Amino acid sequence: MINDPEKVEKFIDALEASSHDPAWQAASPIKQPLTDIEKVRELMAKRGYGK
Image (cartoon, rainbow, N blue to C red; front, side, top):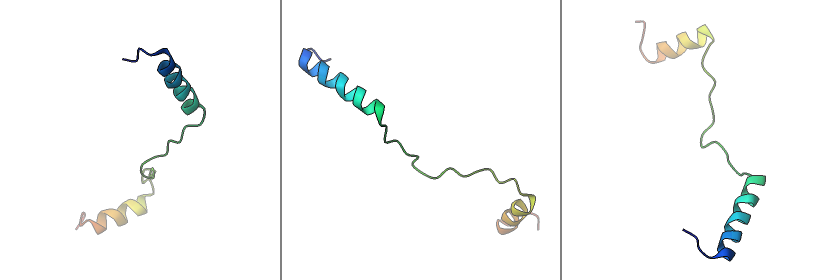
């Protein structure tokens, strides 16, 4: 808990500043689902399915 009014102001200012320019980025690239039937077949063949 923050009891010092000066520390409360600094905390609120920091929250306000961080909300204006968030630096969030995805940790890993987002891959789209595989929908091309030929690509699905190739992937399954590599993994040994369908033999």
